[in-house]
Image 1: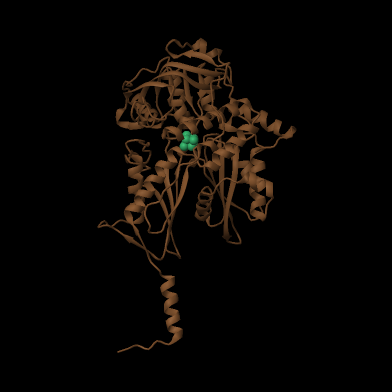
Image 2: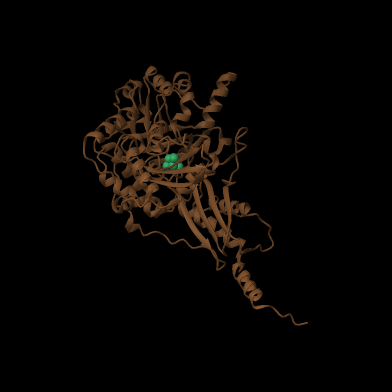
Length: 529
Ligand code: SF4
């Protein structure tokens, strides 16, 4: 029987067919694209971040902050050339996946969910033999916290949208910056800028500024946080926005928060300076009349994200950036740096260090971070001996990337020191350490312990991990080998650059620096890039 179709019905069928045109995407293409993107962002900063940081470097007037930015820029170029991670913390993977409703998946015999496919891409990227990345994910989070070994699972957000493509925005988010995320349920009449200005100083420098702030406004509590994270996927364009002027209220708010945040004087690595944030990105969503949820998530010196679209024609290809766009900055140690022999270090020498002194450390140091400190505390509680003698030694808070080829160790930058504050009295008093190395500020109890024991706290630059690792000549595990990257290592270093951040009298540059620069910014005409 021949069907006779009225013209309107035929048109409608054509429209439906057009609406539901199908593209076929191979699961293998998706997985390979995720793996390539994660390798890519492990060693290439986004060019917009690097150009904004270059402008901040040129404008910076604080010597300590300028030195820190120079280390981050130099590290960035070294990583881009050497294809090794920008930071030892290679992040938790977060993927935003928009799947067109006209997409069909060609499975090649494997049935995988989208989250499974992302995880397979993560696994391949993090276990890549030429550029092994650090596996940082532990499970279960409130219990045994065992490392999953391949950095899975990723956090995957999926949207079904009209269309025939799959769009992916993927990031590797550092734990130090993620830990500083904030959520506030403001009253509708309250100022968002006032809340940011009040909140930012409480976040310390563990998020490795200069970076960017992602702010989500509206929706519900979880929607505001999701918007804040999505906002960080946008390129840095504050310079261009300021040049052309705001076109709407959200752009005006971005500028207001940007200026207010930088006027705090927190500066690179919290040392005091002009550039704390390079941009403020905002996304908003309608909300309940009674509510004004605001989420804020900082992105750090290891800003890492990539975007790609699959249309069925094969795996995504991310072209390498043009290294000519990296600013011509090549960090070298300051001429006034003091050389320190760790193998002959005494408490008298430690007591002679002044806040802000630049040191070049050579000799042997021990490492240890969260899990090692917890285990040391447990051994003391049980009256059992420690695997290493810490007396008159220096400890470095680090969880390095595994080495490849002829490396002694992979990228090995400092981790956030405040997490070790609860153990500081034990490590200085009972274990007998002379000094600690980490990143960002120390809390009041740790500073008091440092003063009481005539010790010192030294800071290395967060986000300059590959540069720092070049000072490490050899590395061997000397305790808690089962903890993987959290084991206790002994590093033999040559001219490792650090700054005295808390001296034996308890003076902290993370207090004095921002205070000084906040006052200066208020008094001198300053243009922050
Ligand atoms: S730059 Fe700092 S916050 Fe970012 S991943 Fe590295 S150590 Fe963590």
